[in-house]
Length: 196
Image (cartoon, rainbow, N blue to C red; front, side, top):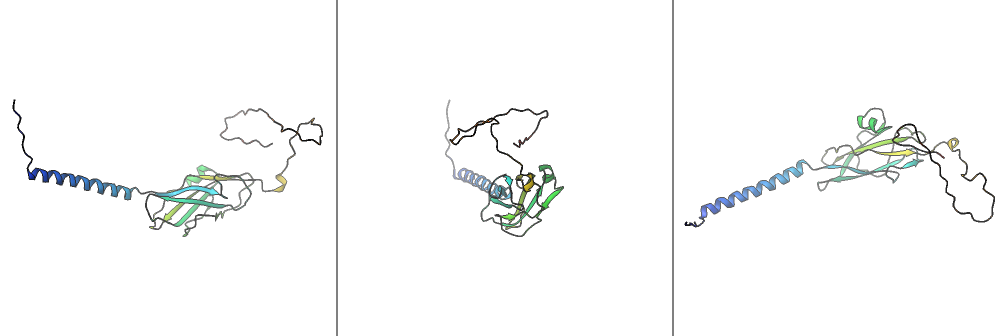
Protein backbone atom coordinates (compact mmCIF):
# COMPACT_ATOMS: atom_id res chain seq x y z
CA UNK A 1 0.00 0.00 0.00
CA UNK A 2 1.32 3.40 -0.82
CA UNK A 3 0.12 6.80 0.22
CA UNK A 4 0.48 9.86 -1.91
CA UNK A 5 0.68 13.29 -0.37
CA UNK A 6 -0.18 16.14 -2.59
CA UNK A 7 0.83 19.67 -1.91
CA UNK A 8 -2.02 22.07 -1.67
CA UNK A 9 -1.77 24.50 -4.49
CA UNK A 10 -2.51 28.20 -4.33
CA UNK A 11 -5.74 27.99 -6.32
CA UNK A 12 -7.26 25.49 -3.84
CA UNK A 13 -6.24 27.72 -0.93
CA UNK A 14 -7.81 30.75 -2.62
CA UNK A 15 -11.05 28.89 -3.35
CA UNK A 16 -11.22 27.68 0.22
CA UNK A 17 -10.52 31.18 1.62
CA UNK A 18 -13.18 32.73 -0.65
CA UNK A 19 -15.73 30.12 0.42
CA UNK A 20 -14.99 30.80 4.10
CA UNK A 21 -15.23 34.55 3.56
CA UNK A 22 -18.59 34.21 1.73
CA UNK A 23 -19.94 31.97 4.51
CA UNK A 24 -18.79 34.44 7.17
CA UNK A 25 -20.36 37.41 5.35
CA UNK A 26 -23.61 35.49 4.86
CA UNK A 27 -23.80 34.67 8.57
CA UNK A 28 -23.11 38.30 9.53
CA UNK A 29 -25.70 39.58 7.03
CA UNK A 30 -28.37 37.15 8.25
CA UNK A 31 -27.62 38.04 11.87
CA UNK A 32 -27.97 41.77 11.25
CA UNK A 33 -31.04 41.33 9.03
CA UNK A 34 -32.83 39.09 11.55
CA UNK A 35 -32.07 41.46 14.46
CA UNK A 36 -33.57 44.36 12.50
CA UNK A 37 -36.50 42.28 11.32
CA UNK A 38 -37.29 40.84 14.74
CA UNK A 39 -36.31 43.80 16.93
CA UNK A 40 -38.88 44.08 19.67
CA UNK A 41 -40.16 47.19 21.37
CA UNK A 42 -42.83 46.98 24.02
CA UNK A 43 -44.20 48.01 27.38
CA UNK A 44 -43.56 46.40 30.76
CA UNK A 45 -43.89 47.08 34.50
CA UNK A 46 -47.35 48.63 34.48
CA UNK A 47 -48.08 50.34 37.80
CA UNK A 48 -51.04 52.20 39.24
CA UNK A 49 -50.38 54.70 42.01
CA UNK A 50 -46.81 53.31 42.25
CA UNK A 51 -47.95 49.70 42.82
CA UNK A 52 -48.31 46.65 40.58
CA UNK A 53 -51.92 45.41 40.53
CA UNK A 54 -52.96 47.32 43.67
CA UNK A 55 -56.09 46.57 45.70
CA UNK A 56 -57.92 49.23 47.68
CA UNK A 57 -57.13 52.34 45.61
CA UNK A 58 -59.02 55.36 46.96
CA UNK A 59 -58.05 57.77 44.17
CA UNK A 60 -60.97 58.18 41.76
CA UNK A 61 -58.68 58.93 38.80
CA UNK A 62 -55.45 57.05 39.56
CA UNK A 63 -52.10 57.71 37.91
CA UNK A 64 -50.76 55.03 35.58
CA UNK A 65 -47.10 54.44 34.69
CA UNK A 66 -45.09 51.99 32.57
CA UNK A 67 -41.63 51.31 31.21
CA UNK A 68 -40.52 51.00 27.60
CA UNK A 69 -38.16 48.22 26.53
CA UNK A 70 -36.50 47.56 23.19
CA UNK A 71 -33.88 45.34 21.58
CA UNK A 72 -32.76 48.34 19.54
CA UNK A 73 -30.73 51.33 20.62
CA UNK A 74 -31.87 54.96 20.68
CA UNK A 75 -35.56 54.11 20.92
CA UNK A 76 -37.87 56.52 22.73
CA UNK A 77 -41.62 56.70 23.12
CA UNK A 78 -43.34 59.21 20.85
CA UNK A 79 -46.99 58.31 21.57
CA UNK A 80 -49.10 56.00 23.72
CA UNK A 81 -52.61 54.56 23.95
CA UNK A 82 -54.27 53.22 27.10
CA UNK A 83 -57.40 51.08 27.21
CA UNK A 84 -59.36 50.14 30.33
CA UNK A 85 -62.19 47.59 30.73
CA UNK A 86 -64.12 45.74 33.43
CA UNK A 87 -62.69 42.31 32.53
CA UNK A 88 -59.68 40.84 30.75
CA UNK A 89 -62.00 39.44 28.08
CA UNK A 90 -63.51 42.86 27.31
CA UNK A 91 -60.04 44.36 27.36
CA UNK A 92 -58.54 41.94 24.85
CA UNK A 93 -61.57 42.01 22.57
CA UNK A 94 -61.69 45.81 22.62
CA UNK A 95 -65.44 45.79 23.36
CA UNK A 96 -67.21 47.53 26.24
CA UNK A 97 -64.22 49.56 27.27
CA UNK A 98 -64.57 51.87 30.25
CA UNK A 99 -62.06 54.23 28.68
CA UNK A 100 -59.70 54.46 25.73
CA UNK A 101 -57.29 57.37 25.60
CA UNK A 102 -56.85 57.11 21.85
CA UNK A 103 -53.39 57.74 20.43
CA UNK A 104 -51.76 60.51 22.46
CA UNK A 105 -48.64 62.11 20.96
CA UNK A 106 -46.47 62.26 24.09
CA UNK A 107 -43.35 60.75 25.58
CA UNK A 108 -44.98 60.74 29.04
CA UNK A 109 -44.96 57.30 30.66
CA UNK A 110 -45.14 58.27 34.34
CA UNK A 111 -48.24 59.44 36.22
CA UNK A 112 -50.64 59.50 33.27
CA UNK A 113 -54.03 60.22 34.84
CA UNK A 114 -56.87 57.78 34.12
CA UNK A 115 -59.47 59.80 32.24
CA UNK A 116 -62.48 57.50 32.34
CA UNK A 117 -65.51 57.35 34.61
CA UNK A 118 -64.87 56.65 38.28
CA UNK A 119 -65.09 52.90 38.93
CA UNK A 120 -67.46 51.72 41.66
CA UNK A 121 -66.29 50.84 45.15
CA UNK A 122 -64.35 47.54 45.19
CA UNK A 123 -64.53 47.27 41.38
CA UNK A 124 -61.53 45.72 39.64
CA UNK A 125 -60.60 47.23 36.29
CA UNK A 126 -58.03 45.94 33.80
CA UNK A 127 -55.78 48.08 31.64
CA UNK A 128 -53.18 47.85 28.88
CA UNK A 129 -50.83 50.21 27.09
CA UNK A 130 -49.20 50.27 23.69
CA UNK A 131 -46.65 52.80 22.50
CA UNK A 132 -45.20 54.19 19.31
CA UNK A 133 -41.47 54.68 19.02
CA UNK A 134 -39.54 57.55 17.44
CA UNK A 135 -39.71 55.72 14.07
CA UNK A 136 -43.51 55.65 14.25
CA UNK A 137 -43.72 51.87 14.83
CA UNK A 138 -46.43 50.69 17.22
CA UNK A 139 -45.70 48.08 19.84
CA UNK A 140 -48.07 45.26 20.64
CA UNK A 141 -50.39 45.71 23.61
CA UNK A 142 -48.79 45.13 27.01
CA UNK A 143 -49.79 42.26 29.25
CA UNK A 144 -52.97 43.21 31.15
CA UNK A 145 -52.63 44.77 34.59
CA UNK A 146 -55.38 45.79 37.01
CA UNK A 147 -56.24 47.99 39.91
CA UNK A 148 -59.08 47.54 42.35
CA UNK A 149 -60.94 50.36 43.99
CA UNK A 150 -61.30 50.63 47.73
CA UNK A 151 -64.48 51.62 49.53
CA UNK A 152 -65.24 55.13 48.31
CA UNK A 153 -68.59 55.91 49.97
CA UNK A 154 -68.51 56.56 53.74
CA UNK A 155 -71.85 54.78 54.25
CA UNK A 156 -70.26 51.51 53.08
CA UNK A 157 -67.81 51.60 55.98
CA UNK A 158 -69.62 49.39 58.48
CA UNK A 159 -67.38 47.60 60.92
CA UNK A 160 -66.77 46.84 64.55
CA UNK A 161 -63.73 45.65 66.46
CA UNK A 162 -63.07 41.93 66.40
CA UNK A 163 -62.93 40.73 70.00
CA UNK A 164 -63.83 37.73 72.06
CA UNK A 165 -67.40 37.94 73.28
CA UNK A 166 -66.47 37.16 76.89
CA UNK A 167 -63.18 39.06 77.08
CA UNK A 168 -62.82 40.76 80.47
CA UNK A 169 -61.89 44.44 80.69
CA UNK A 170 -58.31 44.96 81.80
CA UNK A 171 -55.89 47.84 82.17
CA UNK A 172 -52.92 45.55 81.52
CA UNK A 173 -51.48 44.72 78.14
CA UNK A 174 -53.16 41.73 76.56
CA UNK A 175 -51.47 39.03 74.48
CA UNK A 176 -52.22 38.97 70.77
CA UNK A 177 -55.31 36.95 69.96
CA UNK A 178 -55.56 34.39 67.20
CA UNK A 179 -58.94 34.19 65.50
CA UNK A 180 -59.73 31.34 63.16
CA UNK A 181 -62.78 30.20 61.27
CA UNK A 182 -63.10 27.52 58.62
CA UNK A 183 -65.60 27.62 55.78
CA UNK A 184 -66.24 25.96 52.44
CA UNK A 185 -67.95 27.06 49.25
CA UNK A 186 -70.41 25.10 47.17
CA UNK A 187 -68.97 26.20 43.83
CA UNK A 188 -65.50 26.22 42.32
CA UNK A 189 -64.32 29.80 42.52
CA UNK A 190 -61.39 31.45 40.81
CA UNK A 191 -61.23 34.17 43.43
CA UNK A 192 -62.92 34.60 46.81
CA UNK A 193 -62.98 37.61 49.09
CA UNK A 194 -63.93 37.45 52.74
CA UNK A 195 -65.24 40.62 54.36
CA UNK A 196 -64.99 40.49 58.14
